Length: 466
Image 1 (cartoon, rainbow, N blue to C red):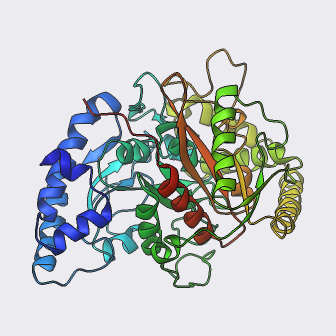
Image 2: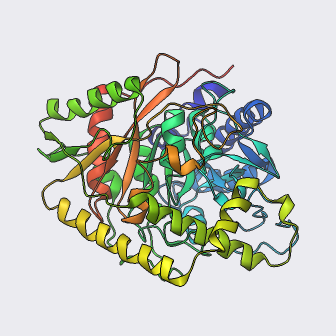
C-alpha cells in the first residue's frame, strides 16, 4: 500500500479521499516513511516532522469525512523549501548564521496560500546557504545528492525539493528560483518545474536576490504543477511586487488542445557550449512540437551582455546580505558565497545602474521578440548532473555556478515565466531537460504546451527507490 500511495498524483489522491478508499493520514504516513528512508543517502530534508504531518492529515481526514475539503490541495502532503517562513518551524537557510530560537509564528505568503488550500506540511527541504547558488550543499546541512546517481548533484538551489518530488515524497514540492533554482534541479533530476512570471506568486520577506526571485511548484506531472500554481498565485498585499490577481485556473487552462503556436528554438542561446548528447535530445523534443502542429523556427533571441548583468546583480545581492548580517564570523560562510560577496563590496552605484539599464533594454527586446514568437525552447542545461560537492564541473575551468547555467538566469532578468520539462535520459543514465519560455504573464500557455507534450510523448520513468 505504501508504495502505491507515494506514486499517486494529486488527482488520484483527491479522488481516493472523495471515495474514502484511503485517508490523508495513510498517505502522509507513506510519504513520511519514504522521506525517512531516502534521507540518509540523499540528504533532501533538514526537518521531517511526523507529528505535524499527521496532525494536519487528521484535520484533512475529518473535512473529507464531512465532504467539506478546504481547497484544491486538501490532504496533499507537501514539503517546503527551508528559505520560507513557516509557522512552528524555524527557517535556517542552510547557514550557521541563523538560529532556531524565536517564535516562528508567521507564514510566508506562498506557505499561507498552501495552508489555506489544505496542504499537509511534513518537512522542510535542503537549500544552499541563503539559496545563493545552483547547487544544494550548505555549511550547516551538508551535501544533497541526486537519486539517479548519488555521486552526482541534483542542482539547486531547490535541490532538496527536486529530490523529494523525484522520490515520491509528496506529489508536489515547493521551490524558489532567482537564477534557475527551480529549473536547474528539475533538469538534473528529471521532474517538471515552473518559474512563473515575476510577481505572479506573492513573496515575503524579500530574499537577498528578491528582484529576481519567484516561487513555484516542482512535480512529477504537469497537471500537478498547474493545480499547485493555481493555489500559489492567490494574492497577498504584503508583496509590493505582486501582480494584479487574474484568478486563472491553471489546471483548467492546461488541459486544452495545443493551438498551432509560433515557436522559436534556440539550441545554444547565442553560442553556449552544449554537450552533443544533450543537444540531440533537446532537438528531438523541439521537433515534437512540429508533430503537434506548431511551427518551430531555429532563431537566437536578443540576449546582449546578459552574463555581465547577472553577475552584477548576484554580487550586489550577496554583498547586501553580508552587510545586513553585520559583524559575524565570515569563515563560517560557504566559501563561494563569501568570495562573491566580497566582489560585490567593490561594486559602485554606477555599476549597478548600468546593469539595471542593460536589464531593462533586454527585457524590452524580449517583449518585442515575443510579438513574433509564442514560445521559446532551449535546453534547460547544457550538461547532465556532475559530481556532488562542487560548484562547477570538476576540471571544467569554470569559476562560478553561473558559468554552467546559461539558459536559466536570463529569464529571471527578463521576469518571464519558464519551465523545465524532462525530455530524455543520456547514455550516462542521467536526465535531460527542455526549457519552455513564455512571454510575460503566459504561464497557462507554457503549462498547456508541456501538458500536451507529456500526454503525447510521456516523461522518462524516474529511478526506482531501493
